[in-house]
Length: 298
Image 1 (cartoon, helix red, strand yellow):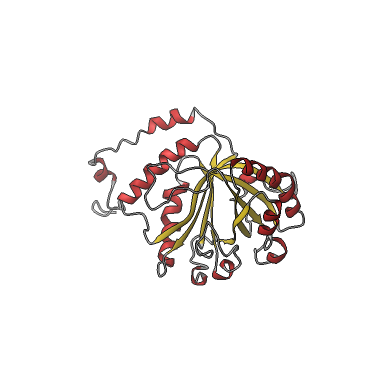
Image 2: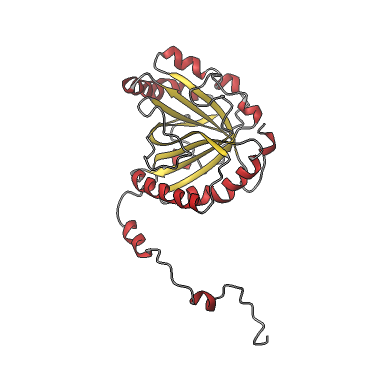
């Protein structure tokens, strides 16, 4: 090999040596790792349902999957699991009730992203997520042609399992290859009624509905308010004192047995007198690295 024939690419070590070093405060990470909780329990979640604007479906999918899912979520401290879900038009038409306080129209929000956050690390994560999203916005890395239909950080309050100790735990739920997910949102009349609703769900309703169903578990969350310095395109969370969010993790496509297992969830909750179901919405997992299902959204 001659002296002027090298394999060194542009931006070589010699070049970069001339560039000023960037202080990333790396030493601070070693200090932070030694303090605070670091368990595996999903103490908190980010649940975000988004509608790309018509004509921008492919661009949105690629931006979210190729950039934002990583830079705006998974690369952040204390998010330890994530998964994206999609509702084709056929799945959107299964949603109920028609008059929903969550989605207007009820078919709005064809993409759902779910993330688990380490218990006890909510405040630390929120400070990071507000800062990184401000930076991404300034750097032109936020896709503007979308609407947040239902976006909230939430505290975990319960998990109910169909098969007891057998099978994956809730901290596995976003990594296990579940074939579908049902998002259910229930509003109670007030804080006291929500506590009663949660007790009924945990001890009676969910164990009965899970038995013999395609759902292996249901995780239950209550929303928390977003910080005042959040990005302006995300509206403040509604129902902080009265709402519960349920995620049903399914071992089969939600269309299989929909009528038998999910079409009447609103009726049973209404009959209990403890709340009103504002949304029951089925999803299937996206296929990372592809645009599968995008053509089926409208």
